[in-house]
Image (cartoon, rainbow, N blue to C red; front, side):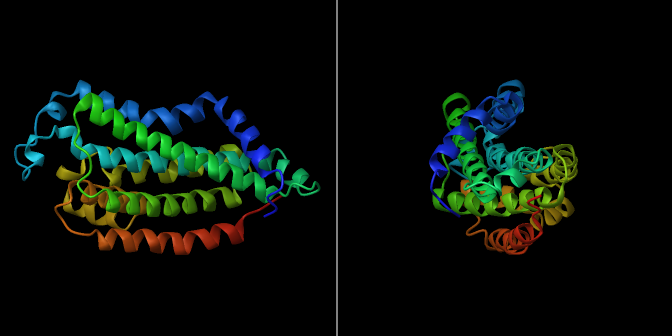
Length: 254
């Protein structure tokens, strides 16, 4: 990847990205709105988790939902924002035209990868800070495990999003394919049925899905009372090892 001019390209694309209201809302704001909305609207989420071991028995119930919201932030950007951007570039012929200029199309894809990672950092940080300041959620018991799982979740889900974008001819096609994966993934990651009350069969299926493994691993790291989430980490690494090379190999530049 030729880096000359990449900074200018990144700054320009970031300004364009920030002018897209739907992308900004779902990538940056939606996870925090969901967390704060549920935490403030549902009385059960405000009551302490009296059945949990100390010190979590004094934390509000919404604490158990925060890791799922962080996983949601990863999945939302990876499956609803990024594939549509890349497929739209292909649909409008931008990648083909760039190939004839000194700026290779790979730089445009790289710039949007950087933008989406930055958006994820802002989105996850906003959810955590908002949960702590407004809802009284305690910070993670093991931040290093949370960070590790978040990084692996990002690589696995972005690889899945890249594969979706690799072959979709249009932005609408990428949006449809992304949604087909996004909503079932939310179900098995604890968005619809919170992880603490999720049936065992759903939890087992979720363990082998990238977003489900992400939510489970983040939960284990946040509460820090179940050791290291080895199975979830291995699942996320395996998804990345399979999907990323496949997405790169199948990616259509024209």
